[in-house]
Length: 264
Image (tube, rainbow, N blue to C red; front, side):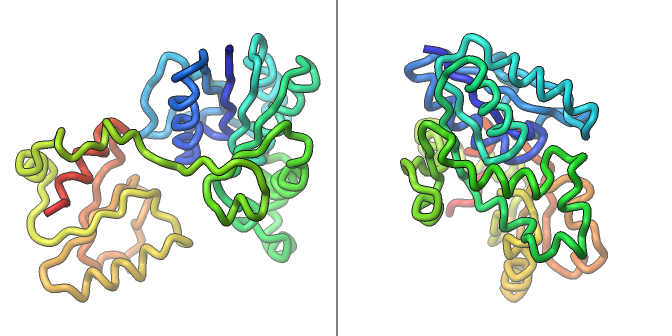
């Protein structure tokens, strides 16, 4: 069996969900991941697997060619898994499914329509800009088209309640993250941690409560908040008053060492 997992953007943290699903499916099938990639390259934490295939990310009309390439990459597949109701993932999968007569599984790992509410489109026209493959218009339409998929999987019970389907939690490789495999003392020295440290290992975004967390950590004497972030993240002057240790994004295979060094 051959499975193609489609991600709408392999340069974003959303690519990690596609990678996790692909790893699970590789236990019983030949699997490839396909999706657009920005000029800056793959998401830093995404492992450079030989079975990841990319097309150029961009806007319409240039993206038209990339869209066709994504459909072409689905050739020979027995099943398609589209992560998120996005044009470059679910949209391309539906076109390929119709052309190749193969089933599509829609994987819902977030409430994507919540990031660009319809009520804000008029005030922020860029949200609904149809030249963007990630336009809120496409996301809204494809979120309502779950019935076109042969099956739906959801990353949480709340999403399962809303979209239906089978629950597949966004879990981790328990063997890779086994704390018994890590020398905590040497790893803490390597990363330069000392004293009480709180780690925020996700992608820093305004809606994730990072500022309240920074305020809480700042109220504890000697405590530090370690954040994995890119140069442009948390760059505003207002962040300078918080005890933040900035860490560059690291590959997925290094995350177990990063987390284990914080465990006392």
